[in-house]
Length: 355
Image 1 (tube, one colour):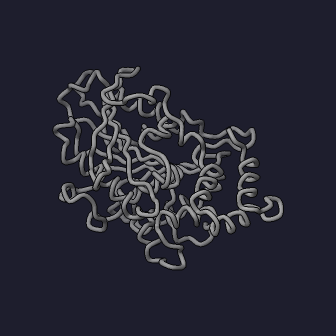
Image 2 (tube, one colour):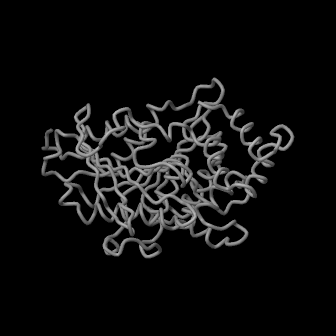
Image 3 (tube, helix red, strand yellow):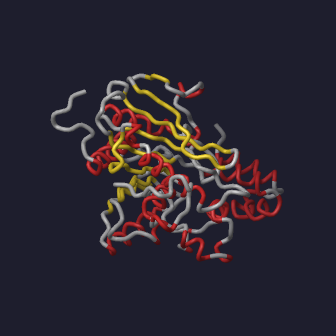
């Protein structure tokens, strides 16, 4: 694995800067002028935990209807087609209850990757123990793809895709054996931002697939782990963040501040919002802790149901800093999320049901 220092040296060589004298800001400035595509790769390598790109070991082959231990069944479903592009999600459930007539609650997972990289199977290693725990209790776990930001795809396209995932699940709830009224969204990093946007923005504020738009995108709860919440906060802007956010929005802030407001989950939080769980690393250098703190404070002011869990001694998401122990530990964080989702969606099984 490359070290941050090595990557900065490579970036400096590529863009003819000296890391010691010019620093990251100097590299970013020159890189923006010379090669924005290559710059994006360097930014991602420097800032995003490698766990975002790790696959669960068995994920390298065909995923369709694969049976894994402990007795999980995965199926790939196409929920939306845009021209020649097909967007799908993987749906996981315990094989012990896959044929059960009971309508299962659903967790929709939105992957991270700075809005520009990743897919529905990358980064799932991080959440895998939670996936197993929820499926063993009768929940259905969905990991979805969305359009990545690039020259041709900008906000609100990725948010519309996440919301269309929810709409598809509601439209096909009976066929899929799920409860259309018990769906939660969860996202990590950029996925946390998209999950919050899809959960909080009014139904009529976003477009989507005409075949699905008649169905509500409303969910029962939303969880964001180190996701950006307010793109308008000036003191949270750095060269790296500005580049990544501008790639999503399509404009620098000074060119279109209204668009940055439209892309900020904090602009939509209200007393009518679904319950919100925010988890954030106190020493996150990519998405500052203040993003979660401001969202929490604003939600409290308007009377929204919100909870904030702080993660100590960690960089972005769950990134070790020096030799300090991250608290809570990963296992405990995933259990906190699973317990929260179970409280909000209710038990998967009724009191008289048995697996």
